[in-house]
Length: 467
Image 1 (cartoon, rainbow, N blue to C red):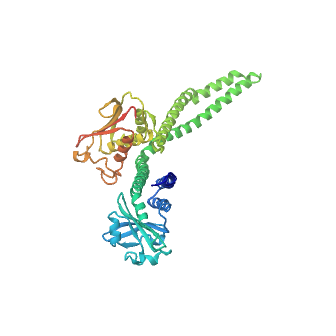
Image 2 (cartoon, rainbow, N blue to C red; image 1 turned 30 degrees about the horizontal axis):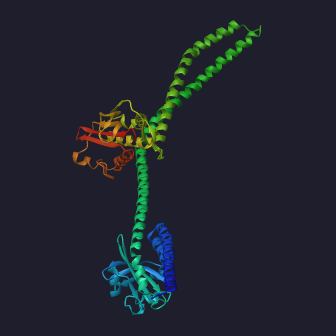
Image 3 (tube, rainbow, N blue to C red; image 1 turned 60 degrees about the vertical axis):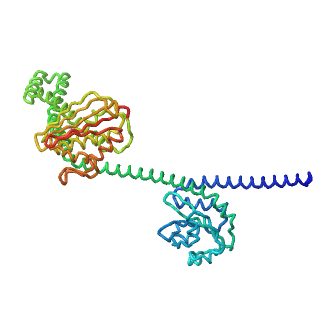
């Protein structure tokens, strides 16, 4: 029977063992926590495995570590390694590898006795004699983590038990990192998609500008030519005004001189005024100044519309749909006026949230499409108002209708597909409606289409008041 002193010593020894075990577990937990944070910061699969190798070096000592992944029946490939010479090397699946793949960690006392190592032993820059195989799986992966050491028989069953204990931890860690990498990839793809969409929008915008260029130039050239012509007339009028000023100065001089008769000078001045038709000139100048002012305002409006149309900023803010329609009409009017009548019925609307430049692009595309659907003597009706949409609630709407050729029923469902067009070659890129749909969708809006062959088409856009 143990004495009190012996029992006390035994309790102290047990307490010491428990404390040592607790300290070891605490250190291990701290290492794993630090390692987990590090691995979760990985920005790629390669970076993830590099960080993972660093974590396990504090738990299972190694001199070389690498990952073997399945590539084809009976073969594996090295996808990540601390030794670059092993990367992309192919390995035969021998019985020990097979046992590991099935889920059991395996200790290899001497790798030179394993057929799978073959030429790989001589490939390594470091002398390797023993190994530990640890199976793990993850998204689209069923692999083996291999730890190697230069000392023969270095790895024992205790190492295999540690590997088994951390197998679930490893798999959960890889799963978390893969989820993060997938999210990063999704975000990257989203950003790339947005860049492509922006590029396509700009391309379609430039195509529309190219189509409208001649008409816009004509719309600007008319008032500019008129102003230029009027400037020539004003220059001639200045000569008469100069002569009038000379008579006036002479009258002032006559008042101060007794040698000049003001009556004779006034008579001469009256005769000249009748011949020069000064009254008519002054009236004409008043009209010309007003006409020049109107013409220059027209040019200013067109330039403002162009600037709004080509604006590339993505900022969304309150906009007036009617203002967008009127601004766009200034650009497109010349393209339409020679073969169709444009009727505008704009109702009272409230502001909506969106990008005015992009909405102008939608309106431009719909008006150009309507114009191209009409051969001659057609009619385009533009209307706007407010209403309640079944899915979007309170909305501002606008519609563009034409009595052109219409869209076949079987093609209506495809008109918003990229690069799909019902026009003849050379009349469109096939991107206009697809881009318009994307712009309206980003404003949380809806595009509705009604059409009948040879009767025309109507596009109605609903934009929610609350964005």
